[in-house]
Image 1 (spheres, rainbow, N blue to C red):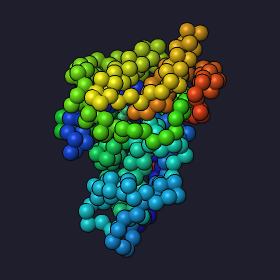
Image 2: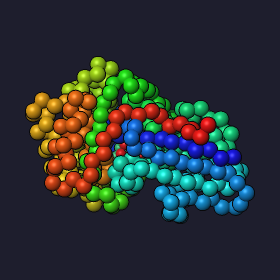
Image 3: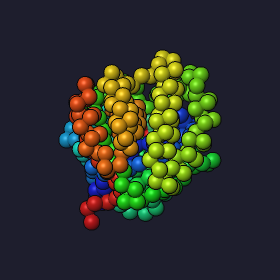
Image 4: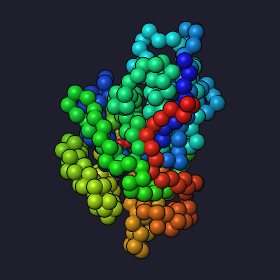
Length: 318
Ligand code: PMV
């Protein structure tokens, strides 16, 4: 009745922003991501006698997140399940634009599946994780993966395994506070108010096919071009929402500038930024030291995390 699973966050190179069905949490666009390896969330689920679920996150009770977790447990183990004690532990800042909800819900569905004996397969678990947090579906898979928004339900298509293309990701932390607007609320606001939202939806297929081809050819130059364009387009939608959603700070901009400078010196590196002020620099292994050094000395950068490409969510207590 107890199981522990581990999952890594993922970062999208072609982004998900917008929902086509808020109640079922279905994405309005497909997306393409890379799963990281050094950052991780470990989640233990224990079903036991009692009438209430309990959640602890990094050693502290977290009643504010319990409802979302309980709903996700119901979806995996059924509403008739026993009460659960859920213990989550992450080795990186949570709620700060580092995709902690992706690793958390991916680990949660795997642990709950094992602890309850529900026997869902990986794709079914990805769909259940995605219902809790859209990007979490991608963390069920390692390497580079595409999330196809589908018609009725999402599909996940692995594009390259973790060791097929040894990309590195350097994360520059520019602020470790919790973000002001959560991604779910932000997406709903953008869909309702940004005049750019419809072109964002209309162009996504083109960006995806360019990125898919770049991954197939292991062409980091082509991937750089489309990933930065897609990231800036998503942030333009955010900025032009009413009220505006601006996650960047001056260090975010300074990091983007530093990455452009590195590229001008011949390094294969590009940036991407999610719903937060952190900058993720994706590069080839030959450039990782130069990228880490340049970002570490960029004004306003508080910390640097370096990671390679990781594997999908899995049980770790067997
Ligand atoms: O999975 P959510 O609801 O936290 O949304 C993730 C949104 C972005 O990180 C900004 C983009 C993405 O595709 O991961």
